[in-house]
Amino acid sequence: MNKILAPSDGSLESIKAVKKAVELAENYSAELVVLNVQDIHSESVSTDSAFRRKKAEEVFDLVKKELPSSELKISYKMLEGYPPDDICKYAEKEKFDLIVMGARGLSGFKKLLMGSVADKVVHHSKVPVMIIR
Amino acid sequence: MLKKILAPVDGSLKSMRALRYAADMAESLSADLEVLNVQRLKDVTIVEPISWEAPVLKERAEKVFSMAREALEGKNINITYKMLQGDPADEICRYADYEKFDLIIIGAHGLSGIKRFMLGSVATKVSYHSMVPVLIVK
Image 1 (tube, rainbow over the protein chains, first blue to last red):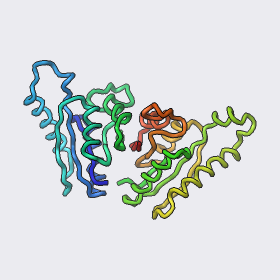
Image 2: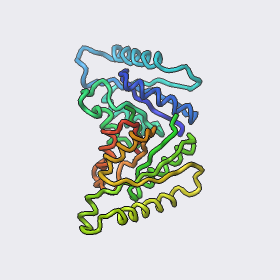
Image 3: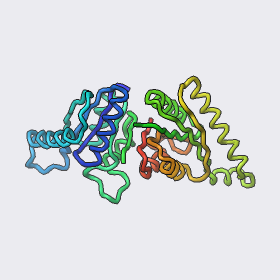
Image 4: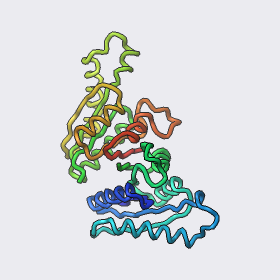
């Protein structure tokens, strides 16, 4: 296990998943990438790339604040597109060994057992997926 | 961190692959591995209407476990075997929660999934309902 991907949208559940990913990466001394995908389809027309980048930065700041200090090498990556698609594509293209993600992020209803993004990633990803609750 | 890993298997090739994945993970994290086989009661009643008592189920589980033992040969980890009866997804979730496992590692497809689905019914149900983290291996 060399590369672990932790997609995060800044929600509490996703940050919990990132923490788990950090533990795992430390155990394996693997490389960890925190990924934030900005959804360009749900945005209104007024938003531009710079604004999305700022939003992604905010998410990364939230994640960084919550993470315990560790020796681990963590990189942060932002993509624009459709979150489930881009998570799967990126994980495959960059040959990740594992995706660690929360069951529900910002888009899910409380009532649902699993949010739409996690659901799609679990179904479509060729890379193993770990779901954290 | 991860001290107890649960690997449900049904004897299918895919589930054996997930089991090997689980064993590798348990080995490198020095965690304990439990191999779980759930015998679905309904299957038995349909195929063999009169012989659905415990011995038959146990025999079937034993068959799966011997396959598992073969797959796990040479692994330097603590492995236990457990058989349960009932609906596989329900029992997997209930057992993992009750026995406080840290992780369930399950294959995307088992015996009940149709190839064209991207995720089998048991894996889907477990990933929806489990309170324990679930790792799905394709």
